[in-house]
Amino acid sequence: MVTEPSRRGRKRDPERDAVILDAALAELAESGYAGMTTDAVAARAGVGKAAMYRRWPSKAELALDAVARLDGATIDPDALPDTGSLRGDLRAILALQDDVDDERRLRVMVGLASMLADDERLAAAITAPWIDANRTILRRAVARGEIAPTTDVETMAGIIPTLVTYRVCFQRLPIPPSYVGMLVETVLLPALGVDGRQQH
Image (cartoon, rainbow, N blue to C red; front, side):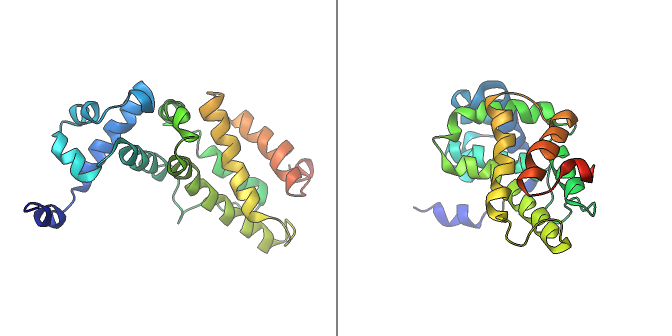
């Protein structure tokens, strides 16, 4: 096509992308994935549909990037909590999901729940940043001698965000400090061979 080279050469506008992704998050929170349309996102963002399709040819791709933006604003892989203890790190990383944007996150995640089983990419977009973060935290704990070198870090790193995703997406509940404390002390630390009560 004659227009294809010019499209490829066009620079993306990070500010416009951010506006569109925020609009997509708002639509997901209000209408869920099934009810979200690219037309509605374009109208909310104040952009033309052509601009939308140049960036995201499908609704699924738009939702994937919107979720990545949501988690990217919450977790910075280069600035993970480092409290000096496994217990403190686990509490801190879980507490990141109970921030000032928690209500919007809850609504977005609930809106995506129906698609998690149907789109592996979406499930990965939701959990992958948290799996990476937990992997780092658990490897630190191994290096400090808090947990055994034989600990299955990969499995545990995946279990933690799965528990949180189930609570948020399917139980439709937030992640308050009381839940964080219960999860760390009675589930995660014992599963990792640590007596949470002694650490506390």
